[in-house]
Length: 225
Length: 283
Ligand code: SF4
Ligand code: SF4
Ligand code: FES
Ligand code: FES
Image (cartoon, rainbow over all chains, first blue to last red; front, side, top):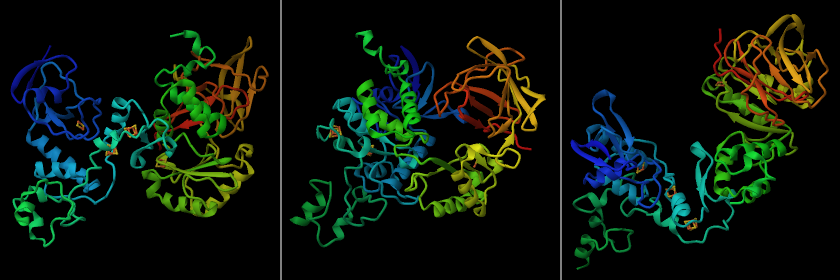
C-alpha cells in the first residue's frame, strides 16, 4: 500500500492506482475529458491536472496517468490548478466551440471568455475513439495519422476499413460529435446559454425548432403553455 | 507458440516493439517510398496492426507514402533560416519546379520538401540536394543548384566546388584526431582509419572533404565489401552508428571537431553518409 496526502487527507492506495482514481475514491471531483473508465489512460487533454507539492517546486501532472507515489502531497483544486484548468478549457473552446461537452465544461468551470484565434476543428485529438475501437470493440479500425498540426484520426490510407463493423462506438464517445445548442449565436465561442439564469432563447419569437439539449426545457414548457 | 513460425523472417521482424521502424526503413530503402502494397504485406506478415503501421509511417518525415523523385531537395524553414529569407527561397524552388512542398515533379526528377532545421543554422538559408549542403542560398542561385542536381552532384570536381567542405574528425572513443596530414587527399589532410575485411587488415585514408568520395587504401577493397573500421590510436572498433539509409549496412560515426557527428557507410562504393552538426559551435 502506498501512503499519500490528497487535499490534506491521508490515505493509502494499492500500487498502480492513478491519482484520479484515488482522488475520486476520496470524493474529490476532478474534471476529465479524454479519460473513460474501461479505456486505458491516455493523458491527451490535460484537463485532469492536479498539483503535487507546494510552493515554487510544485508541479502539475495529469492525474489520469499519474500513479500514486509514496509520501506525495496532492492538491486537486489549488489556485494554480484552477487557473491551468480554465486555460485548458479556453484552448479547447478555441479549437472546438461547437462541442457540447466542451461548452458544458466551460460553463461548469466559469470560463467566460475565449481569447485565442477561433478555429472550428472537428476533432480535439483526445484519442477516445481510437481507444474505444481498439480496446472495447476489438476492431482497431481507426488510428492517429500524421503529426503536429497535420495529425488526424482515420483509417489507414483513408480507405474504408475491413475491420470496422460500424458499431458506432467511436461516435458515441466522441466529445465533439455532440453538438451544442447553436440557437442564439452559432458563431459565438461560448454559448453559455444553459448556465444563464434566463436562457437566451426566451427572448426569441420562435423557440421550438431550435437545437437544444435541455430536455425537457423549463423555458420551453413555460412558453408553450 | 511455435518458434519455427518466424524462422524465415528477418530477425527484427519478429514483432518486437520498435522493430516496426526498422521494417519501414527497409521498405523505404528498397522502393524509395512506402508503397501501400508493401505496408499491407508487412501487416499480413508481422501481424502488427495496420493502424499502427500507418500511424508510424505518416508520423516520421523520413518516410514517404508517395513515390519520390530522383533528386530530393530539402529547403530548411527552421527559425534561423526562416529569418534569413528561406521562405523566399522555398517559393523560388516551388516556382521553378512547379510543385508545392511535399510534392514530386511530374517527370519524377525532383521531390521538394521543407524541413525544420538541419542543424546548420549559421549557414542559413540551407538547401540540401541529395545530401549535399548548399549554404546561404539566394533566389538567384536556386536555378544553378537545380541544374547541378540534374547533371549529378556525385561527380563533382572537388577543387572548384564550394559545396564540399573539409571536416576535421576524431575517434568517438578516445577522441584522438583521425586526421593524417602526411597523406593528403584532395589537397587536405586525410582521415586515417584501420579497416579489416576478409582476413586483410590495413590502413585506409578517406578524403576529409564532405561530399568527396576519394579513398586510398593499403589493400584494394573490392566493391560492395562491408568493412570493419578501427581507430588507429586506441584500436577500438568504430561502432554505434545507425544503418545506412542507402543500403542498410552499418554506419561508422566520427566526431566532428567543431561539434557534431558524421556517419559514413561501411560498404565500399556506397555513398551513404550523414552529417549531423546539431552540436556545432560556429566561430
Ligand atoms: S464504428 Fe468502426 S471505427 Fe468506430 S469504433 Fe466501431 S469498429 Fe471502430
Ligand atoms: S474524433 Fe472525437 S473522440 Fe476521436 S480523437 Fe477526435 S475528438 Fe476525440
Ligand atoms: S483526462 Fe487526464 S489528460 Fe485527459
Ligand atoms: S534553421 Fe535552417 S539549419 Fe537550422
